[in-house]
Length: 156
Length: 148
Image (cartoon, rainbow over all chains, first blue to last red; front, side, top):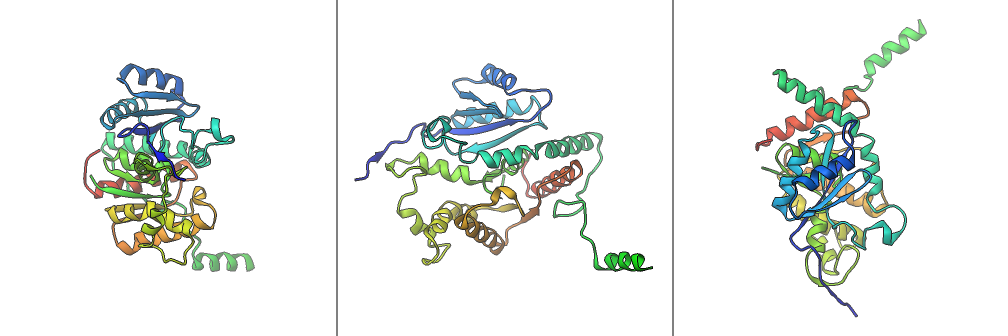
């Protein structure tokens, strides 16, 4: 027989705040978050923070935290609140579902941070950077003509 | 402010980029939050009730595995709602079981069928590609209007 489901934290928003910075640790970010938040639930993790609260409070907090290191702080929505028994690794054992995706993307953040810093510097200098290709790659595929040229050069 | 569907829908980088340039990212977390904050009958872990795969019928036929229909019940309405989309092709983290793989194919198909502004990118593998990646997304999002 189905039992009734009574949700917790109705109307709240939970966000991950990832920090991948040489100058800022999750602990420093958590202290800063406690300084500027009012009644927001903050959980410090190995990668940054999880913050839960009403949407306007979270929006304000996240905007303020981003200013600490704009190119190295990344924010993402989370469906479940922290410690939810359906997702928390304390109850499930092993890594939390979704952890591997974050682990993969954390490895790429240094490239994205470099990109953000470069774009911001260029904008501040009034220069314009236009992307090379819409596929997000600077390295182009080897064309047939170029391949033929290479083969011919090898044969000679 | 435009609603931008992101694929992979759990992507941290895309979600951040879209919000950074003043738009609303539509990802899996938004759909999951909506379900787990709605009272009803207990249906753990994602509060997917038997009604959800029926809603998925709008996007996938009845002979399609219920896993695909259940997933489409999450993503389908967001694709309908989206005003633009960013797709990362060949993303390692989008790898999954057959249910995920078929859903992923269906998601990209539905996005293209809707003919909304769509940006195709790949994850950067070097600092140079990082600049290209960020610039491509920035130009795309600025073209949608809104403010930073």
